[in-house]
Image 1 (tube, rainbow, N blue to C red):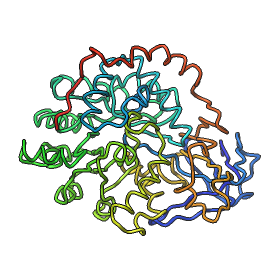
Image 2 (image 1 turned 120 degrees about the horizontal axis):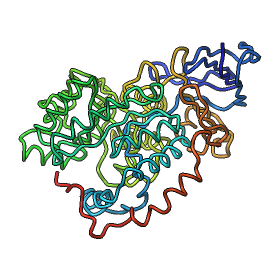
Image 3 (image 1 turned 60 degrees about the vertical axis):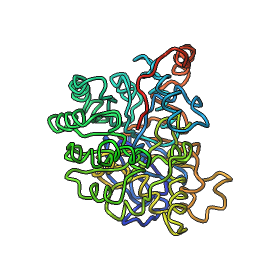
Image 4 (image 1 turned 60 degrees about the horizontal axis):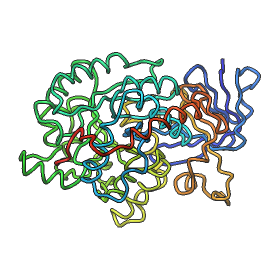
Length: 444
């Protein structure tokens, strides 16, 4: 039985970092999984409950945002032209002092709207008031790997509290929601807190999502204060004994890379190039990391350091940035950029067996991309156009878990007007920076 049939579509295939297109094919979906990919006309459309005529659009796996603070869209455009220390201490950690739980519910929905429009079907989100974020994901019909942020200064008791959140929501929304523990960073969590987080993650069968070595300055400061790099700190505290997502790791040293490659449990790096460029943080050499077998996924980070939740931008900046970092125009290739955006992001997200590919048996997270615009013409290479030409607005239809959540740019799960109407009256309070106090102080 075919519940949904996508007809006349050009299917992106990535095998061994080689990209090809299956032209003029049909994709059959049964329940929440892909059951067939055949040349158009092979699958009888009369047996399908729903049919989408893609009319020659490209079908890609839904993008996975490996690291974000989704509800930070509430402060988009409020931390401009400043360095990292000022960004933290004079902007974001003052603004977040205003945050109330319902703000996260509506901010999450706003961010999910934007991500759906950009073809992002899953996000690894690290933020506050995550019960409210989970409700937003449940409503949107997307996937999420949710972590409640934790600062060590707030005490060890919060680890049990956030583990409670993790256990309440893991596997919710028909399996679309998964959870992971989220100590903020080694510079905001001491060794005792990190050890306790790793122990609790192991106890409940979870993992860790953490910021680490965001800059080379952080690595230097950690060596001076602790005698270890931030990556070494995590290693001795047992973090890498459970599955781990590392946000950024720009300041990781060659010996740190070896630690990650030899880690006991899967470790992946979330790469957020627009944030790095905007805050002058530098870039990682992804070619070296990937040569060691370390998984790299694309992330947006938050919209106060990125301004958009758009992985098309991130994919393009990743490819271009690596050519600059390595001084070699043959790095990173188009096929490698697409692989990072799909299959490798699924590895970092922890669901490589189910996501990141369009193939029978995989979960049906699929986006349809229109390549008929003038910025794609003449279409001499579909794959080159996807990496270097495509825009978020080219995404026409989004399917997650076998359900259509946006069709021809029309949202079917979230109400944009309702979301904006609920956010607008909150903004006067949320924008205040005077006399709010800081929830934390950046001191790497």
